[in-house]
Each structure stands twice: as C-alpha cells, then as structure tokens.
Image (cartoon, rainbow, N blue to C red; front, side, top):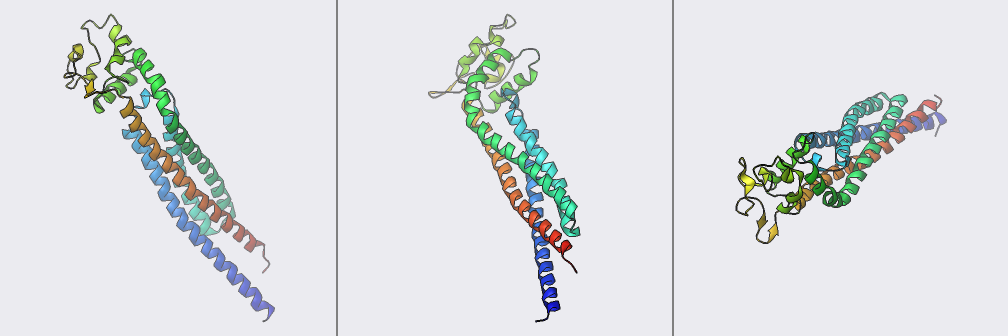
Length: 266
C-alpha cells in the first residue's frame, strides 16, 4: 500500500477517534450538568424546608455540607458550558481550564460527602451531649430566638417534649426563672393543644409525655430526621463525584488526542 494512503488512513482514524471522544465527552457532560442541577436542587430544597432544626445543632457541619453542595452545583452548571464549548471547538485551553474546574468541584463534592458520612456517625453523640444542655441554657433567652423557635417547631412537629423526656425541662432557665410566674412545667409547645399557660399541668393527657411506656422525648425523632437527610446529601455528593471522575478521564483523553493531532505534520 502506498505511503500516502497509509498517512491518510492514519489521519482518518485519528479524526474518527477524536470525534468519538468529543461525542462521549459531550454526552457525559450533559449527564454531569443534570447531576449538578440535582445537587443544586437538593441543596436549595434543604435551605428552604430542612434547615429549621439546624439551630439545635452544636456544630456547623450540617450547614457546611449543604452550602458545599450548593456551591458545587452552581460550579457544575457554569463548568458544563465551558466543557461543551471546549469539546465542540477542540480548544485545548478551554479543556485545560475545564479539567481544573472539574478537580475543584470534585474536591468540594468529596469533602461534602465525607463530612456527611462522618457527621452521620457522630450525630447521636452530639445530640445527646449538647442538645439538653443548650435546651436548659438557651430556650427563651435573649439572643436565642432562632434556637427557641427551632425547639418549639421540633416539639410540635414530632409531637414530643424535651430531649429524653418532658422532665428535661425541670432544670432549665425557662422554668426556674423568676419570670415564670404562672408556674409552667414545660414550654407551651409541649402541649397537645398549645394555648397560653397550657403547660401549667404536665399530665400525660395535656402534654407529650408518654405513649404507653415510652417517653415522648424528641431525641430519637430528631436524630432520625437529620440522619435521613444527611444520607441523601452524602449519596448526592458521592454520585456526582463518581460521575465527575468519568468526565475527567474523557477530558484528558480528548485533550491528549487534540494535542497529538496538532503536533502531527501534514
């Protein structure tokens, strides 16, 4: 076979390989953008409807996980456009910048996922050690309005009272304070039918105290609620990060193929 024919065949095969890589990268990039939109949507959904109990937590990890997920989602949308343009135009500079941004997003997603999994394991200990203390010190105190609202929402939403039981309120500043002139035994949010001064009686018929032989403390319900959502955040971050690895691999392959083609003599 003549040398010119071999050269043309080699160039044809290279162009075909490059076109395939570009098509695959664009397809994966589209899935990547969808994943980023999903992460962004879950982050915004968390901010809108799942953050009212964040004030009850003693650490900032829950908030940090959510905001990392939102930040990564926004970056994914912007980076996805750059990746598509770089693949279509066969621009090495764009693809290099795209790869660098992918690495940054990958690190954000990994950090968010790791934090979510670790915090998932330590959440019970944090709630046991700090929630009762914060409840006793901070409920209905000046400057702790967000915490007080979160406690009231928790007790009404989960139909519970206190951390382990209603008795947790007996040593709180709210109950022992001289300002408690009506002799409330618990906050009014512990009442099955909240009304002014409804908690002067702590009988089970009046407040969320017991159900059979089970104390109606809020710890178990709050922990389950937060753990379920942390699991969703962790899985979302991990799934997007795994998809990102594939996108990075195809980006490197396409960038290398374009560079090789540019260096070949014609």
